[in-house]
Image (cartoon, rainbow over all chains, first blue to last red; front, side, top):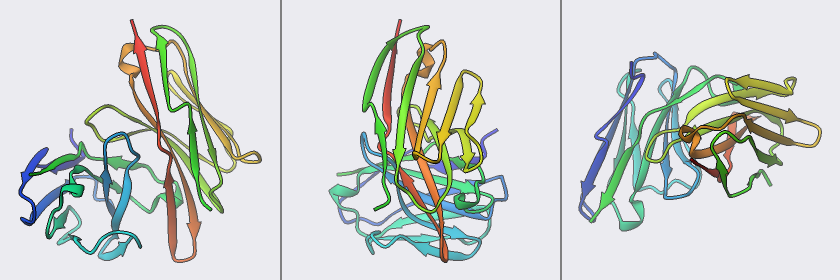
Length: 115
Length: 114
């Protein structure tokens, strides 16, 4: 059974047109993460939520925002997508932060194309 | 500077052969080290997690080792299968004031040929 679900799996948007990617989890985990992964590169952490507390990485552009309305759902909003934002976006969850050695579960990812 | 370096960058082996992937890190203070397998177009899947006190951990045909003194880890794959073709990513976490820091390696791309 899918534990971390991402929708849609593929998303095409136009340059500058806002887009929202969604993630849901059935694990009741406290922490939800958003990563950006470009071709042949390692995933790059954009931000994470620890319960309702939002933690932004220092180098995440302001163009990227996130919302977590409840434990199960987390959204990634890209306000004005540029061509450089085309990537795979991965959602992940863990019971506690990875510094505490808890398992981290990734979703299948959403492949974003910007035209 | 916190870094995780993996080698080789890519590797081609024949089905049934064994292989070993390397991970060297300078992340400090060390909390744990994880190996993930990522199939093309999929999210990473955890293979092993090791803390400071653990020096080996197995998951089926995958065995990870950790030498916290030399800050090196390896992932050994036994009797490789075609389905082992994937990227293998080493991730090191550190507990820091106010939270944590997670550093991803660039990964090793493994190709298993029939």
